[in-house]
Amino acid sequence: MALEMRDRCERCEIAQLPLDAPARICSYECTFCVQCAEAMHGVCPNCGGELVPRPRRS
Image (cartoon, rainbow, N blue to C red):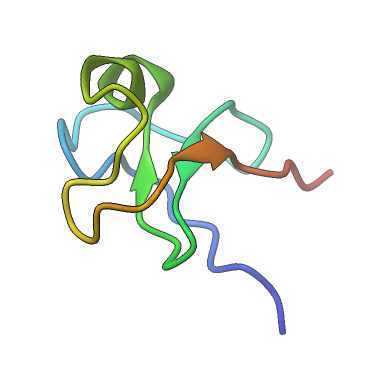
């Protein structure tokens, strides 16, 4: 089962997140740009989970 690689930040919806771009995700695959994740202190606003670096696909 592969991760769903979303291409937009769920907070600002402006940031484009190509598969090779840095992003942060929680265990439910909520996806945020690095700037928004830092502003939220690494906590997902949807589930309260930890936001960690999303693995990159080549």
